[in-house]
Structure formats: C-alpha cells, structure tokens
Length: 167
Image 1: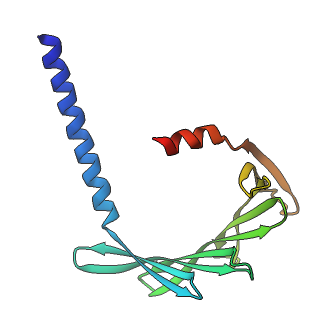
Image 2: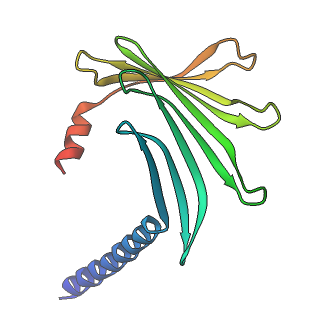
C-alpha cells in the first residue's frame, strides 16, 4: 500500500514537471516570428522577430546564397542594434562541394578588423556514394592563420540515427 502511494506521488510530480517544461517550450516557440524572403523557390533571407506582448522587435537576420545547382553556398547572420537602428554582422558560414566532401567554414565578425576573421573554424564532411555523411573532421585555424589543426574526427553512427527515428 505504501509503495503504491509513493509510486502515485512520484508519478504525479513527474507529470507536473513535464507539464511545466512543455508549457515553457511552447512559450519560447511563440516568442519568435519568422519572415522568409523567397526568390526562385529558394529562401534568400530570413528575419527573426522577437515577440513581446503585442510588439515585434528585430532580432536576427540570415541571408543565404546558392550555386547554380541550388546548393547552399553561404549563410550570413546579422544582429539588430536597436541603439544605432541597424543590422550588425554576426557570423558567416560558407560551403564548398566536391565529389565526396562538403567543406564548411565558419567565422565570427571582428569589429576592429571589419571582417569575418574571428573564431574561424572548418568542418569537412565525408560523403558516401548516396551523398550521405559518413564522417566529419573539425579543424581550428592556427594563430598565424596560415594552416589548420584537426580538433576531432567522428564517424557517423547510422544505427543511432535509425533508432532515434523509430522512436
């Protein structure tokens, strides 16, 4: 009898916690509004507005570029500066495609240099014959910015992905 009551109490507390967490997630989902700009059926820009009551405030803007095969080649983010009322560069990602690899470069905006040359990183994704990633390598740029040092090498685990999709 005591075990049943304890089980019911623990179950009730767990349900309350899940309910509260679920409502917080829903509140976060509703606090942002997205506006997409589409050209030739491709999203070329996306502006995220933060919702506060009945007011919308500019938050972040993404601009996308594509190659002649409609593959993503660049993504640039800007944050809204409400004091100066302008978009300020935030980060930039670029993608390069080869037969069996996709190389992604990431860099943050360096305001003193007025360039995307801060916190530069590179990831190289190895692809199989079906163009599915099978491994990826992460690199960081050396301090003299002349070369790269590999930070990690990871193989894709399709068993884990299949199990996650089955749930």
